[in-house]
Amino acid sequence: MSDAGRQRKSRTASDAGRSISHDELAQLQKKFSEIKHSINNALAVMMALSEMSQRRPDYAEKLATNVLTKAPQIVSSLQEFTQALNEQADAKPSVAGGSK
Image 1 (spheres, helix red, strand yellow):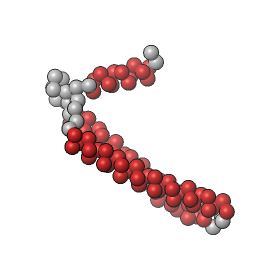
Image 2: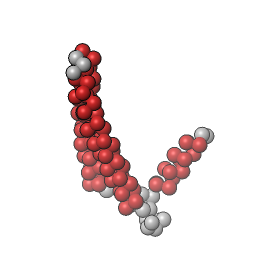
Image 3: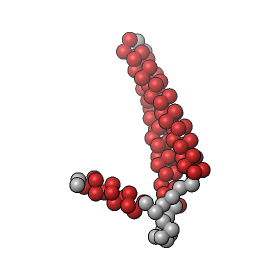
Image 4: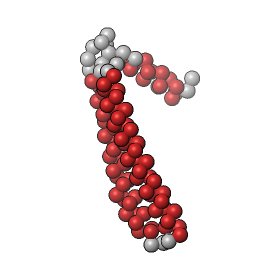
């Protein structure tokens, strides 16, 4: 078994005692859906501006401005979602294992 496989199996075994309520899962799914939608929108605009800038060089500045604005927002959204996932994982310790 590869190192990655052993690590994945170890994480899965250590997390097996954690549970998440249906409402918490629904909240995480909603947040994921919102983030996915905003990322898709930002990337669609970037792709459209990229295609336009190939035909009309004056769109290159709009593309650069859009990328410089949207890229940090995308990273921030993903970091927030990761933090929410980590908080859920930390808030749900195994009953048998006690609290953290």
